[in-house]
View 1 (cartoon, rainbow, N blue to C red):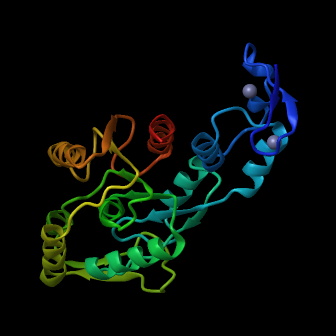
View 2: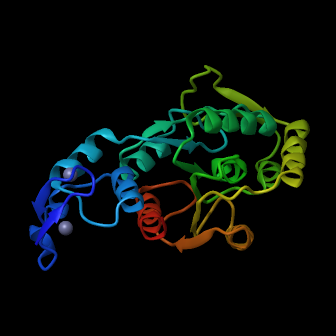
Length: 251
Ligand SMILES: [Zn+2]
Ligand SMILES: [Zn+2]
């Protein structure tokens, strides 16, 4: 069937009876491009426009790392490999939770990321970032960091990856734990435009009781909560795939 492209007004041939021969299917769209097209247009675009959007539409996305990690976190690469087409921002968080949130809020208001993905402690922070326009996707969020840190215990720890700030170790002490406790009890979750939580039903670090509780409280706050069982606390390929599938069907 002959159609007029709603973007460039050129006519093109689109065959919906046979999707394999429709040019829509010949362009392997990034997540960013397909999200944009889905939200902006209601009918097929011509191949030239699809390719143009795919090549040139790269909005910002923000990845929020977990405790003891940094901008070089390997989880951020796993996420970026699945959630394609974005210019990824990876702010490196200071240890103090209030400082961390203000850094994230600065990034959010400056760059206005279309999507914010956070893992573990980063998932918790993503819930509180002031970005109601963004898609929020959190993975195994550590909602009660004070309790997690208490369980981990006092003392020096080494960061998992090389930090941009050059600081490779930190100290967990009572003051730090208290600052997370105060943070938790004094902040409200800010919903994004779409809110997704991917959880492992086999989280060896947080434990199943805690993940169930976190899931329930996020569901109360408007998050679509999905559980997957082929991964643990740390993000892996299965987690990232479940995240992408959930994003595709919810945004
Ligand atoms: Zn076109
Ligand atoms: Zn078509």
